[in-house]
Length: 458
Image (cartoon, rainbow, N blue to C red; front, side, top):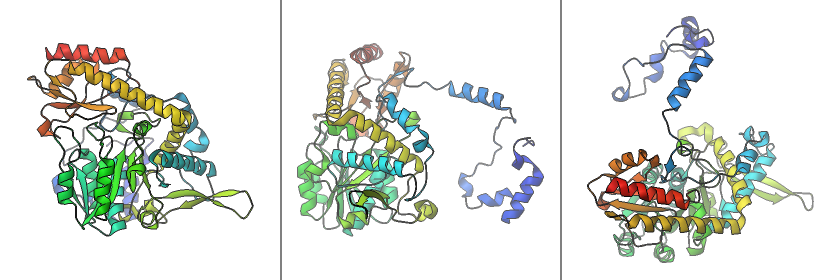
């Protein structure tokens, strides 16, 4: 690499001094722990050193190859959904007292702690849980934490989950549990998608730490057996863990009211843009019991009375002095950016209020069901695959000779982004896509999708 005038470590002498300081002979030694089989041995095709202006132009040219949801009509969800973000959300979260207060301790950043406390309080009301932790990265990490938390709290080493779980969340859950618990899959009813109670009853045992369900499920349908699943789990001394999309709680019963012990979910719909898959916001909530609190591994913010009558102060609990410093040895991990996302979510929830949340959830259900009805009228489709109520997502099966990939490529010519291809994830469903309809989709948008599908599938 040529010497760059504004990058000191490109100078050979500077490189040598840096290597001498840390006690290694070459930069190659720094990568000795990486297995040879996955190391890239070719030369990287890197551009020559550029000026700031040249670099900006190059990056803009590269980014221009992408198409955003403002340029395409998108019906893609599957864990990151298109929702409207009120301007005030970003206005408040971009204020310097929040945006720059990315770290600190109990003696500083009290405004940030109050905002996080409000976030936790509203999520607690929404899920009907008594404790909500400081957030983590996304739903996947939150459900991984929840499963491991259940194993630690019960002293058992098995977690039962439905086969309709998101494959990405299942992967993270297995990763997080490691040697702590084994993840076992429960079958589902092929007509309704609902968890098979018979299979659950045959598999649950004294080894089971928890039963995990998603409501709504990854495939969009509402799991209507919450009370029954809770009863089965609790009769065997196991916990019920529920994963939720929070906007659905505007119309669905809160998990705490049908027996959930731990609740996790994805807060991206609460005022956060999609941003190519992030930022996301995983949340974790539980009942106020010592066995759960000691197993969370996450930070907690609450309030307590002070020595001055009528005044309250914030209590900040960090299970480990620094989960960041512990790195891979930490019980859990989160990022400082997650706190800013939580503050944005608090702004969003406070704007909506209970009535606004209900109206929004009803609007989403009405629009998604209209879309299901219209698409089901297209010859060669089955919508949805399951005979159950759905919230904002639903499955579309294509019985024609076209694969989902072919359909989505054809839709792009109409400036439409189709649903998530789940043919590989759930081969038993055939050529099936997962479509998402929210409050941002108008009747005209849905009709445009239907017209395009009719043309593509004819």
